[in-house]
Structure formats: C-alpha cells, structure tokens
Amino acid sequence: MLDRVSKVFLTAAFAAGLYVVAMPVQAQAPASQPAQKNWKDRAEYDIYNAIIKEQDPAKRITLLNSWKEKYSASDYSPERLQIYVTTYAAMNQPEKVIATGSESLQNDPKNLTVLFLMAQNVLVLSKPEDLAAGDKAANGLLSNLDTFFATDKKPATTSDGDWAKARTQTETLGHTALGWVALQKKDNETAEKAFAKALQLTANNAQVSYWLGTAILQQRKPERQAEALYHFARAASLEPAQGGFAAQARQQIDTYFVNAFNRFHGQDDAELKKLRDLAKAQPFPPADYKLKDVNELKAENEAKFQKENPSLALWMNMKQELTGPNGEQYFNSAMKGAEVPGGANNIEKFKGRLISSKPAVRPKELVLAIMDANTPEVTLILDAPLPGKADPGTEIEFAGVPSSFTKEPFNVTFDVEKKKVAGWPGKEAAPPARRGTGTKKSAKKG
Image (cartoon, rainbow, N blue to C red):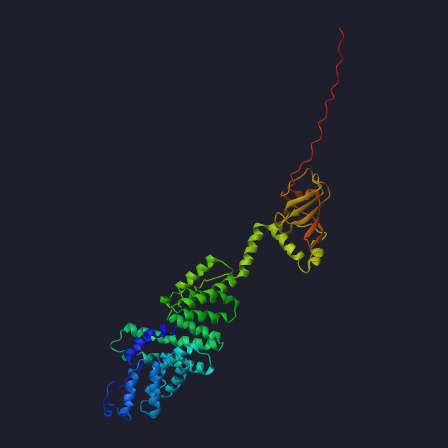
C-alpha cells in the first residue's frame, strides 16, 4: 500500500526538488555556496558527495554517521536529517523514519518530503509516541496542501495532470494516516470518517477499504454489519492493478470475508457473488444497499412456511413447546382438555400420514406421523370404529382433544370423534342382499 500511495507523489516531488533538497553535486569552492551555508572544509563536501552517489542504503547510513560524527555542527544538518529520513524509509525502518523525521521537523515544520514519509511510515506502527508523531505529520500535510502544490511551485517538466495527481495522493495519504492513528486508539468513528475521505479521493485502495470495514465493524452496531461486509468484499475483490492486495494477502482477506459473510447471512453463493460484483464496481455501498442477516432470513422463511403449510407450522410450534423445559406446563395450560386445532389461526385440522391402526379393520386407534412419513408422533383414540381399513401412508386429517403426551419417545394422544376424521378411505360393508318374498300361485287342476 505504501508504494502505491507514494508512486505519483515521488515522481512529481523529485521533479520539483522536494524529495531531496537540492545541494551541489560537483566539487566547487565553498564561496559558491549561499552566504548562509558553508562547508566546513573540502572533506565535508566530499563525504556529502559520496553520500548522494551511494546507491546502497546501508552504506549510505554508514557515510551519514561518519558525516554526523565528524561535522556535528554542519550548516547542512537539516539536509542531512532529511537524507537520513529518506534512507531509513528505503531501508524499511519506519520507527527511525518517525524519530528522525520528528527531529527534522524541528528545523523545518513544513518539509513536505519528511511529512510525507512520516505519514506513510506510521501506517505500520502502533506505539503511542509514533502515532502522535504520525498524526502531527498527517495534519501538517493536509494543512499545507495549498502551499505545497501551488501553481507557481510546479516544475516546468511536470505536467498539470501529474501535479494534480501528486496533490491527490498526498491528501489521500494524510487522511489515511489520520484514520490509522484513530483506529489504533480505538476511536473508530474518527477512523471511519478519515478512511471514507481517503476513498472519496482515491477510490481504488483495497487496504483503506479493509481498514474502513474494520472501523465500522468495531463500532459494534448490528445495523451496520452489512456495510462493513461491503468494504471487506471490495478489499477482497480488487485486482492488484486496481489498487488491490497481492495474491497471498488478497487470499487471506478473501477467506476472512467469506467466513464473515456466511456467519452474517448464511451460505449463499449467488448473494456472495452479487455482493462481490457490486463492491468491486464502486467504493461505497449504494443508498438502498441491503444484506439480510440470518435472523431476518429465518423470519422470512418461517413466515413463508407458515403461509404455505399452516397446519404443519402450527404442529411444529406445539411440538417445540412440548419438548422444551416447560413442556408439561404448556400441555396442561394450552392443550389438555381443549380441542386442537379447533379453528386456531383458521386451521381446522392437522394432517398426518397413517403408520398403523388397531385393529387393522374397523380400527378405533390410529398412529400417525406428521413431521415426516415414518416417525410416529400422534395417537388417535376414536369414540367409534372407522369403517374398513386404510394402507400405511394414507393422509389423514383430524381435530381432537389432547389427553396425554410423552417427550421420549415423543407422542401426543388425542381423543377424537369419528366425525372429526377426514381422508379415511375405508367404507362400511354393504348389508347382505335380501331374498325375494313373492307368493306362489296355486296350480289349477284341469
């Protein structure tokens, strides 16, 4: 992320003479220097000249240390401090960038190069003193933007477009650093505002999107969890060429995002892809963005199920109560002695599948399955035998008065009037045919 943020800036700053303060690059007499600055002797200048030619940062530090040891009171101490800062940045030593940069700013509080590198390097630090210095540097960048990037400061060799990009990148970095500092201090609301401003300036920045999602998530507001997921989705979906993470880091972010999505919404590949595509297309969720959580989806599914299967839904609710810790109390207060369903919720009868009947023909006792076709849950005790017989699996509808129940194995016994049973296919046997009773006529004798 640091390299991405600084690339345009460093190009323009180098061209503007901002990255390293201009110094003589050829041996010349001290008299040619500005009146207020002079080399102590030719040897000091030679050390400096060797430093700016040295490409190896570690060797450059050795030369800088030698310069500092031999010429501690040099007229060019401010420039030396800046070279220290830029070299420590090249060596990826952020603590030393912050410490040396703070010292440099005592001489020049508006040193753009130092402010920039301090704001950049604080993004990997968390000690309070480092955060305080980084916060100061970031505010220094933002409060002096108009001065740093005034039109008359633009080098002739730098295009207007590159100059504008350099300003935007610098402003983006300033807000990003402020967001990071606030995030480390658990000031998540401030962090959110700073990261959001950074993304408004530079939309394609997976790292800032990830930090913005984190700042929102850590505010622990349930109604904003989906918004945080949106930013994680963007962080996980941007390609490197679009400001995204490198492959390994991107995979880690993606794994985190998918797990968080599944916990919030439930596994849903279609909705996951929809969120990825939307987040990849724009840095902030649209105003009407909505991602339902598992509780909302559960409530919707239950409502749909109740509408499509009202009697089964009612039975499931009753079974849940009966098998709960207060099942006996529920049975005695809500079910026992009262006809069920009895028109409750406009449901006249329960539906079940026949498992067995006693006796097989003209039974007065039926065992039914309700939740599935094979698990007995209900026993019906009839006031009169049903006609004929029925095969297992026959769908039976009934309403009755619960008289008892057991939890293990689960079963509810109903006293049921024969007329409250529907779907029984058996028929009463037809009465035997009666013989004819016609009288015989007397034969006439001839």
